[in-house]
Image 1 (cartoon, one colour):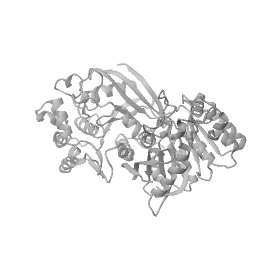
Image 2 (image 1 turned 60 degrees about the vertical axis):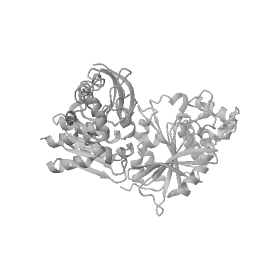
Image 3 (image 1 turned 120 degrees about the horizontal axis):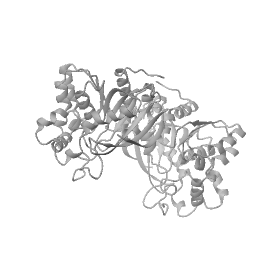
Image 4 (image 1 turned 90 degrees about the vertical axis):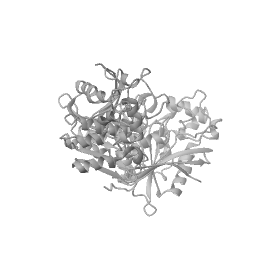
Length: 285
Length: 285
């Protein structure tokens, strides 16, 4: 696969770079961003944190607004931020251009229903195609962690829980914890997966955590003043299952914080340190 | 003057807030943003760093992309980010909607020429009207520092140098150091101030530094890979004067960095620490 580099910015002694490539899985051209810390070299490959963004976002929101590069550079971890859906004129979108279905709203699942199934295979893209591309083309190891925000928090939790052998640790900010029981999830899953809600369960963190036999460390931060907390996010549903199973899940309720990147930037360092500890890294300066 | 609060986000245990107000000086409604660190209270007012943004920016770019809140919260300094020009349908803009004249390009000067002089009085707004508003309505002291980027770096340098009694310290990222000798400055100053370049000198950092008798501390960071460095920014012109006068000017050339917020976010902590030291603050955690 051919990568085209479309931007480069030095940041915190490392590099932020954007690339485009033709995705076989998604059947379209995709863009992603990577932060390579100063430690990364052919002789010193570094682990990768995959960051999955929320509704309406691209690869740029996290890289521009989270302020993650300083700590990632200290710890020596690369960060890869993919887009949130397939893109292009040929790619189906919601007929009303809603923000929560179609472009910018891939929900990190493999769609089975027309017209979505032609391109919306974000699960396979994130779990298989993109890491293969990253591990072939950049000075990184095959060690992976995964994190994300809101819809991307749902993506991180479900992808991490379904693939414990691939991800050392999982974290999320303000994740959609129980998509089969909230309006965002019900709308997207019925469109992408059809109306039989049995088919939705493989993309629901609560269902997955209830069934998993692995004990992955999971860190969640949630703002108490998040306007989506009660109707869409429902961390209490996930926490109830975690408590019953003695899962390694820490949920930090953060008083007064909202759903924005101001919240993420306030606590991103602690998530990077959490992943670094489970990836065997220690702060280098 | 009446302030209307239009947004609030908790960030790093402090608050980011946006306000609108009617500006007498600019003769239009203006928006600004303020970051209040957790230490700020009526019993414990904190000093203020004014941040002046570059061409095309609003109050939002710095607050969203610089990652300054973490260190500002540690140090206990408020940050105020004004807009970069007067705004509104009634406000003159460049007939070609150029990015470097008119809206988003106020250059922090008082325009004397029609049609600009009706609204473009950014110098008076930044030096007088806005600080009076801030000091009346928020738990801050009258201690001020000033910083900015590109056009805003020019603003910080010129405003700081002309008002040593008002600003304890001055810093800038990638500033336009000698606007009377570069295309951006020549275009804007001839429009706003007329064609007699003698009238431009009160807004030129090199002219002001050459004449000042005060010894303010000045910190400048400049990326070596900045595409505007040679044609527009010219820090070497300012440095030559500083060297001749033994000014307290530090210019850090940063190898490989460009003109973007990725550069600013990489070094903003050191600018905050520089200002805090001159404001008599020390890191509190």
